Amino acid sequence: MAREWTVGEVAARSGVAVSALHFYERSGLIRSYRTAGNQRRYGSDVLRRVAVIKVAQDVGISLADIRAALDSLPEGRTPTRDDWGRLSAGWRDDLDKRIAQLKKLRDGLTDCIGCGCMSIDRCPLRNKEDRLGHDGPGPRRLVVP
Amino acid sequence: MAREWTVGEVAARSGVAVSALHFYERSGLIRSYRTAGNQRRYGSDVLRRVAVIKVAQDVGISLADIRAALDSLPEGRTPTRDDWGRLSAGWRDDLDKRIAQLKKLRDGLTDCIGCGCMSIDRCPLRNKEDRLGHDGPGPRRLVVP
DNA sequence: GCTTGACCTAAACTTATGTTGAGGTTGTAG
DNA sequence: CTACAACCTCAACATAAGTTTAGGTCAAGC
Picture 1: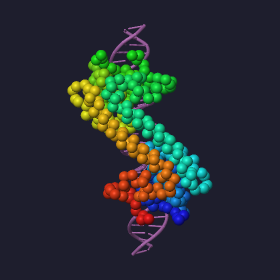
Picture 2: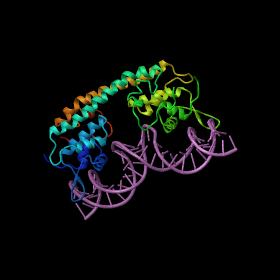
Picture 3: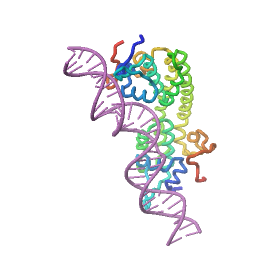
Picture 4: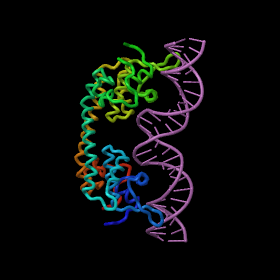
């Protein structure tokens, strides 16, 4: 049950390369303790962490954001199902937004690419964020039409 | 109408940095001709090309794929609305697939992260592509459960 | 007790998508 | 005609997410 895992075993079980596990550890996404001979050993919760990392990545979440989410898990005790559920809920909202955004793009894509305007300030597709409305760095319309 | 554009003008009109325009040219996404003094000049079609590049990027298409699509435009004549329409149609299909994929992920996310399995071979979310079904390189389940 | 496979670290390399900087040239407004 | 903004090239740097390589250590079976 509460057995220990070597890197090689975790790699085989999780489908992630050993080098990636080293990298995740350096990045603070997973932790290991060491044997007397300095080899890594993992608790079984590492399998779930790695699985969550992979799924979140598939969804398009960066390792930095994944790390922030994992850091929100409780210290000291093994995360419960509710803990994991709270974690995924935030990502779900994010996903909903991105799906909505993609749909909008899809619906505008053909029309707008064909329409002839594609103007940075007038095209609904290009001007998604109402660029002219907010100040900030970056190029702006410099040539007045 | 058929006026020429300098890099700076294209940058201002398109909202893309001069360095990015240089980069796009090196990457074969746009073309320029040169003045006697070796400065770039663009035809007005460059504005549309850049606009299409930006929109496609927003949609998540890589520059390599964008280049392939742009290469399919007719040589010699200015692309018509239909040409642009055909180009966007392929991307639209792609987008449809990605939207469907994201929806599937969203619907599986909360349940699966909470469910306790997350097994690389049994979890529906992790085993999207029926990993055990195809041969090829990469780690596979080495420890039999 | 030795061989072999699994493990260790550190640094360099990879790809994509650009940006930044150095050092030099062009073009235009006054 | 001179100053200065805009342009040129080439090379190095930046970031994410790892992989690869080199050189060395550990542990398990024969």
